[in-house]
Image 1: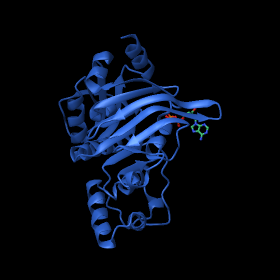
Image 2: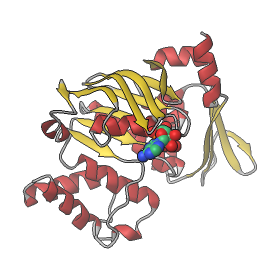
Image 3: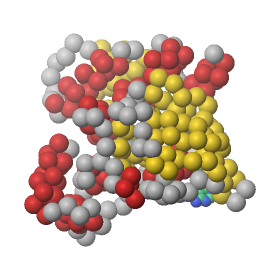
Length: 290
Ligand SMILES: Nc1ncnc2c1ncn2[C@@H]1O[C@H](COP(=O)(O)OP(=O)(O)OP(=O)(O)O)[C@@H](O)[C@H]1O
């Protein structure tokens, strides 16, 4: 679906991305991880045609983005890392405004907006976007990039800066979208999210691709590691307790996901979700020495 061949992006003499070869397959979720400044955002911007590569080619759905991007862009929903909203518009006005830009008839746009806000659990259609919490704003930005029902989503840190439960909601939502047949490329820092939803992972460092492999291979090379959830509940539960919180540790990602759904459904408070082990450096070292 996406093919980057020998892609380099220079800013003056500095290579933000160097000789990148990467493919994204139809229907998969590909995660791009790497430290700050690794070149993730630049790569995503080149995929959507916002930044032109200095060398190499970007093809989407078989079309070269440097020559023939207009029709392809209709198939793409792009969420930038920072996505400020028009703060004096209500959520509904804001989304209607963008649906007009996409050329959608008003009735169809309204139905689509209701559907998206329902599935994103956003009830505040009439609120000014400037009055929303950070997580709600991010959901509105996600709704905006889904308005025209694109088949390809390119999302730059969709859940950066959000609380763990809202982050998980968004990640879970992306998993559902993949289930509906969408292809998704996202950059992320949180390893739990990556492990939970990605089919393949690309790891970048200093503008270069270190490795791109399926999640299973990445898991094997990482070895067993443990996730830890700390939460508060208003009822007595059969979990380890520490300083008034419940603590649950496991290496099984599906158990963590199940507990997060429980916490969300019961309105308990998620205090912390962390991975014990695995700073990204450890992953690089492990992957490079295997
Ligand atoms: N417009 C620009 N002009 C000059 N340098 C830039 C520009 N955009 C990005 N860079 C540089 O290119 C490198 C890669 O930046 P990029 O934003 O792609 O990294 P990133 O992996 O997305 O980082 P982060 O995780 O912090 O978002 C950085 O060193 C950055 O300073």
